[in-house]
Image 1 (tube, rainbow, N blue to C red):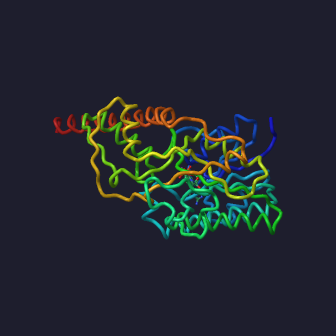
Image 2: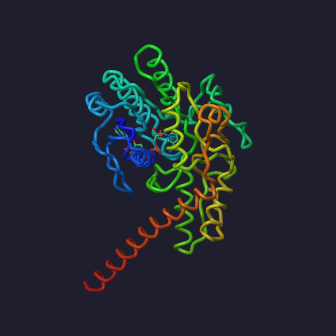
Image 3: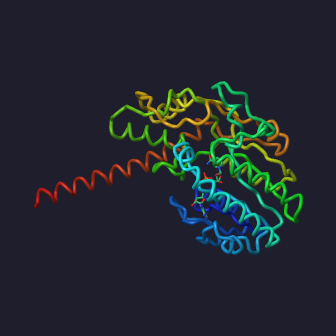
Length: 339
Ligand code: NAD
């Protein structure tokens, strides 16, 4: 047992929910805070408070009597979301991040980990599909992606200045496309791997092989499984490294190839249909040189194994949804026939 008391903000969200489980298994006492309870499972937190972290009073309450804060709360989603709602994202995330960090300082929390993003990297370094992997120092001169990326870069600086000028140690992680089960898979906030699993599960279960892909599908990314993500941030929290650090896989693949891998897992021949849609930067990959140096570790799970697990979970969700729909339709036709 570590006996340490930890706050996870965003504990009702995808990574936060997994992180709470991970920390509980390692003997931490955990308080989870979020606007909402986890959608796809029961939290393992010792205490879970539904609080809006855009209010300072709530941030003070959330950060009381803890040794560490993992700050994951954010108004966030995939490309479809972050390329559209700039004002809402910048407003909400600046408030959440600034007020949570300042409340942690006031409550004398010794250590604070901020979850930044690969969206801090300048768009001018990500113009081709065979892009060079992004090193941490590539973030400057700054030209982040969307308002979402500007908030992440600004809060990185805030964390660094707080640790220089106040009595709080900060850690900064830049995630590169985290995926896995128990994450948002529909509704507009889902990210590419979850959306692809949903579309292919739908194709399989309905017998319609057409799968929509935004753009030409040649845009590239790297994808990291959530079990590696939570392991990485726990290691970073325990390290003495206070500069920003990438956390992701460094295997670059196109969205078309991602679709083929998921289709292979589903055992389905798909017909790709390319449609207009937000694609983000043309290519993005993580340079893990510093990650390996600092943590003496790097993500372990292969994309194929991670996607197989994620696909199985999402196929189950889609099957349940289609089952409800057909049940509702059947009930409707029975009711109509009876009337
Ligand atoms: P998520 O959307 O599943 O979780 C974020 C949680 O924050 C949600 O449960 C949401 O309800 C909560 N939240 C939003 N506004 C809040 C408020 N005002 N008060 C309290 N809680 C609030 O996202 P995630 O994928 O788990 O991401 C966690 C963190 O990692 C976020 O900061 C995100 O920006 C960052 N990140 C994630 C990825 C990724 O690929 N998933 C990539 C880069 C960075």
